[in-house]
Length: 541
Image (tube, rainbow, N blue to C red):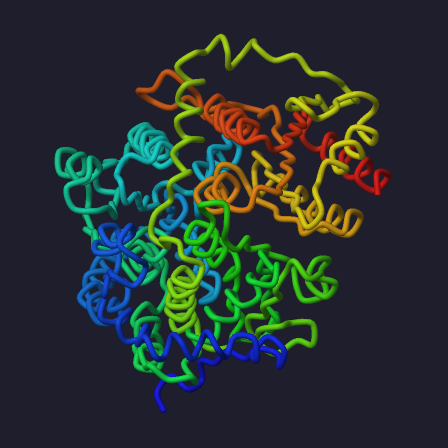
């Protein structure tokens, strides 16, 4: 049967616990109603939002006209010698294209950062060969607008007509759509407004940058189309029903975390970066009203937190089966996108939450704006409680900042509650400071805590919702650092470095306001500070 190569398997114990939920879902015709965009599936309170957020269920059909438009523009650009694609986007506007192009082996430079060094590296590429894709559903995303302003200036200074090198993806009627029309940008792709950002992988947000970079987006839609009839069937064998019900059944038993790893590393079918895309989908969709599923992305099935997962976590392998996994999902990328979207929406029904809103995301954005509006508070209102070499320590109320860095870390980690989690949030350059990601492995190994790692401010558009709205048992380790060189944002009263700093401080303030422990470690020398921090983590264990 079409789509049969896309499967979900749960181990015997979990499958047995999910079976009654699946039976109820089948009886209630949830799969077919979801495929038909029935907004009543999540209760009266969610109906208004759901009624304008369900067009993703048919994108394998409705996105077809984009294929020719994308290919035509790609050929145009290449005839002009333009073959380097840079994407400015956050959250749903960047995560899917990054997975698609990495899986396909297509070159795409993704800017979902406010780190001046990382943006400067992107600017240092060959601008004569560069097209910038500016993607924002709302049209007002501050990070993306900053990238657009910086690149427009750089194009102009290089003697390039900036308007001819900027392509826009946005919703109809957004401020960005209006700006693009006024500025005469090369092309504007208007996405389906009835699809939320985290469900937008198969809209223009996922397909345009990926297709311009050379990915086969028609095949992606074919893969989704093949599995769609299976996912919409009210049958016990529907893999989306099993995946959503298994998550919910495990959650009912206290497994509030979903640990995700790809297990086909090295094969041609590897879905490179898929867990990072799934992270936003699950966290933003379920993490609210004090409940939800925290996705924990790990380096592989042998990583700390996967094989040794405790009863507070459900392990999911994406790819070939793995003995430590309670759930295994298989299938090509386009089909997996649709499968996980269906399963997440179904889990939302079982958890009795609205999977289409994100009520706690705005708080951190507002806190950052408030700091940018008060430069004195941003630049001069902080005094570290401890300085240990290249690391300055800033601790929230209730978190001790005394002693050397090892002592501080020991005291901070001791604040984690039973079955809590540790979130490492690095407001750094995810290319030049890539070694920071090793902290997840080290901390998970030494603490035994389920440990997430996020690059800031990227994670604010994914797990940031769960941190404030989900289970309130997290502790938060922020890592910030002095940039070697800062970048002005044309037409704005702040630099990228100041924006990045405000985003870290703003989110930390909101988390502390929720009563969560926050420890910020500021690196006055990034390379030396990271090395010092790794040694302190190893000593603290």
